[in-house]
Amino acid sequence: MDVEIAPKETEVRLTWDEARMYSFSLNIDGKTGWRLPDKDELNEIYQAKNDFEKWYYWSSTARIANRAWSHCFAGGSRGYHSKNFRNVYVRAVRDLQ
Image (cartoon, rainbow, N blue to C red; front, top):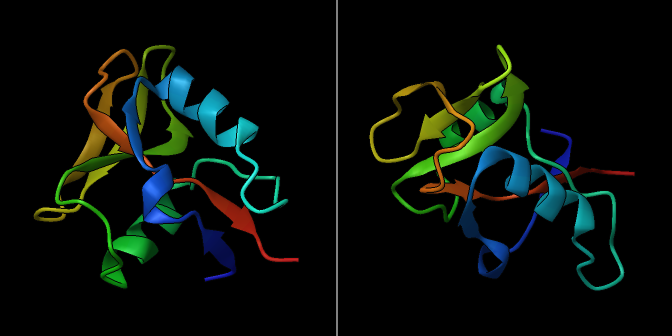
């Protein structure tokens, strides 16, 4: 995986649109360029068993106007949720330079 994962303390629960804006606005120790992981990156993060909560996480992958892909780190289920659902975690990534 060619991304850096934001630290756990940056994790929050937001709607999808809020999650995108939050990720883009992060500045962690002078590092910028953060974003939501796409659904494949999120699956790789899940497979690697990182320090994520046992709950759903947003990806940048959107379907129709009101749905976006999320992945549950409790059991691996994944699918499209309403973008207005606020109870989904955000953990931003950034491309390694």
